Length: 257
Figure 1 (tube, rainbow, N blue to C red):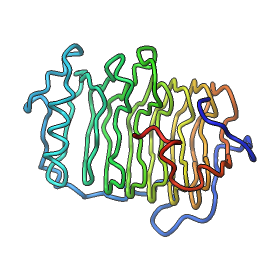
Figure 2: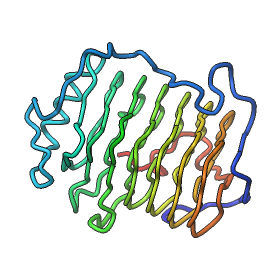
Figure 3: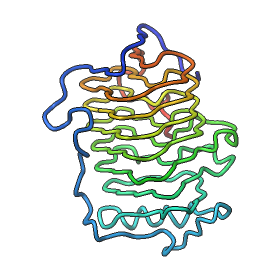
Figure 4: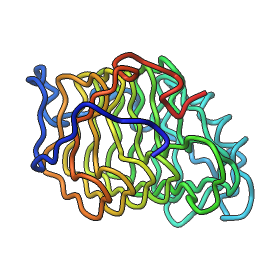
């Protein structure tokens, strides 16, 4: 593990709750930003410069769409297409639906989907896959999806796999929902961290993590995980860990620059 952890570690049941969830946020009861974008407003990345042929670098085309569409339209990756990206910055008010695959370019050494610091009202969903190309990354602290000092983040129905570090890293974030995710092959635990609050995970399927299968790490409150299946972690199943350096947002302890 690239970070030190100490003070408390526990193997818990598949339902972990710290505090009492606020009204309307019980275990991912609803996406906090549901209805953010009119459902008829959809921009297919193939119509806006992306090839998604599993060979071409689609970073620039998709990044441009994410910035242009924020608060205006859903950005959509269609099924049966693989978009190669070097890491994407996700602005506030983004709704990104992925039915195909987003694959990190080998050697990119970047987080695949990084919510901009302080981002608000972001939703990731779809039936597709975020692939971190773990064996092809050589350096850095890399996540599949990451947020720092963010609010209202919803991630649902995706597969997140082959990530060098954290498949999901939610740090110093308020109001987050992870729901119905398949997470496989990560170097570090998917986690709520660094003082995150009101963050809920429900119906996750987590396997083959070289760490705890899921972690609450550093001052996390009013948060929990329920209805999930965790297997193949090399450490605990679900852990609650205390680290004074993580009790507030600490950029040195997150995968963000």
